[in-house]
Image 1: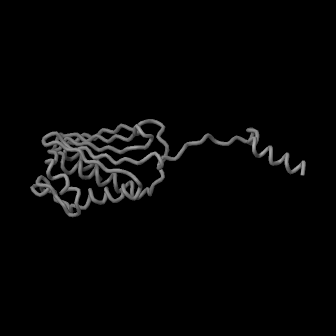
Image 2 (image 1 turned 120 degrees about the vertical axis):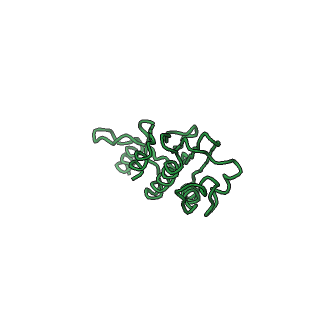
Image 3 (image 1 turned 45 degrees about the horizontal axis):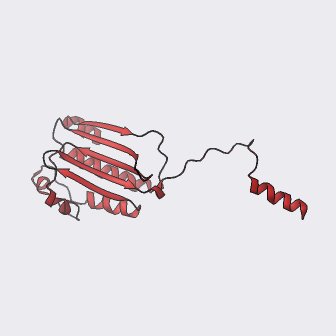
Length: 167
């Protein structure tokens, strides 16, 4: 749906995903909602011929992030608290032909909070906006190698068996 809308507006969407990222411990529907809300806003406010960049990768602390950056009009610094509040809309959104309810970003904030994560919005007028959803290291699932049947039992298991025989 959003790809079609972007294509009709002549917006180029680029994606960069770091290789080999493990899964995160999260509600899949909630994370889809986060991505959908952020991408929807980026496409909505990016003018024809603009760009939207999606990045997914590691944080320096071992967590993971989702970044969606657009080349839209940006948000005045004094309006950022407004657009992050429930039903809040910035002046550009109010003037836009595609008005929303003002719930997208507050929902993203709430869902990220539920996942022990952070949500950050960076914007500069006439340069665009970047939204970053960050999941902490504790939400990243460790990838363990598969257990092979030819592997010897762990040392502790061997010592318990030897105790049973001796007892």
